[in-house]
Image (cartoon, rainbow, N blue to C red; front, top):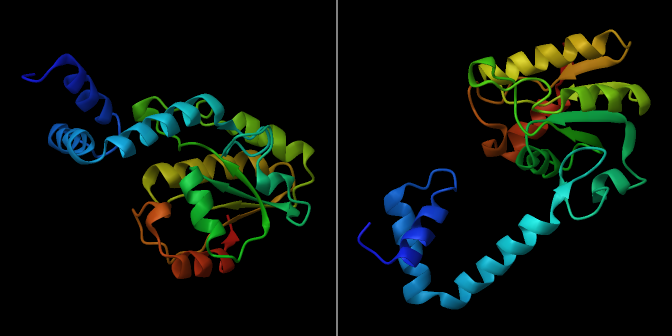
Length: 198
């Protein structure tokens, strides 16, 4: 690059974010250096703190700063309902509907044999272990309706159905091929209320 090593390093570091290419990273870096040094300092502190202190909830695998997240710790949640989602962003999307009061399990991805993503990589063995010991009566699969999401739903349903647990899937209404985190709350609430057995 034509800039100093520190500026080059800042630009390259910003490129780790999804959807940020060379030009976008360069614009961000220059914005921070030209107009928002205080904001850049706060961003650096927040990143450092989050990278060292945020971990996964031991029960549901979402991000939190303690051993158990607020949702799993809440005694008012319906403990017999477990909603399986792909990411913390999907958990947030379901929570924002205000229609679901059960617990969650966050896979942190979906199966993709082509990309080398196996059941172990996304925590399916941990999910199965959790379902066995938690008194779950209904497992709701709220995965994105993509090819990988459908394959992941089918794999989990086959593993859980043999335990005698009702396995449901959120209803259609979520556009095919759409990422769950980008679906509006009304559509997602309708899909949750219209879930069906798998």
